[in-house]
Image (cartoon, rainbow over all chains, first blue to last red; front, side, top):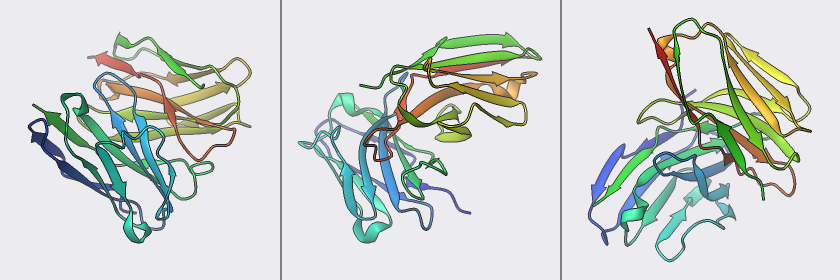
Length: 115
Length: 114
């Protein structure tokens, strides 16, 4: 079974620029998550989709972050404009349901550096 | 509000030692708990998933236990090897009104010296 695919692996941008990350979950997984992991910390949920609907975006900084999951498959997370504190690894994960029985599968992440 | 804490933050042991990583959580109403491994610059690899009704799970040299009432989980690694060097993350899935969100600890960075 193919894993969760993310691209790009690395991105360096200047503050106030925009950036987009892409995620393709495991085939058939209804739920998709975007997590932000700042260096030295555990991942923090930004947004969760169930199919193509948003379930939880309570910790998403909506003034600068946006995400979509068209057709309930792959997803894009965008930051515009970026700030220095957005430097982090952005992890995408997916689960068959809501992770209760089978757990979660994470992608390799996108490391963003804002300079 | 659920909080997850992992102690110690870092651990260095000689090869061959058995070791225990600790995870504690403040709200015992959890659905499940999962241990992950993260190598430098990489994503998370799932190691063990323990449902709230279970006491432990085993996979090879790894054994994870769960004591919901005391809000604690341990990850036991037997006969450690240099290849076990990584950061180990504990995450809980809250049980009440939950949508699937995971709450993570800060992680324990393990170094196994040859």
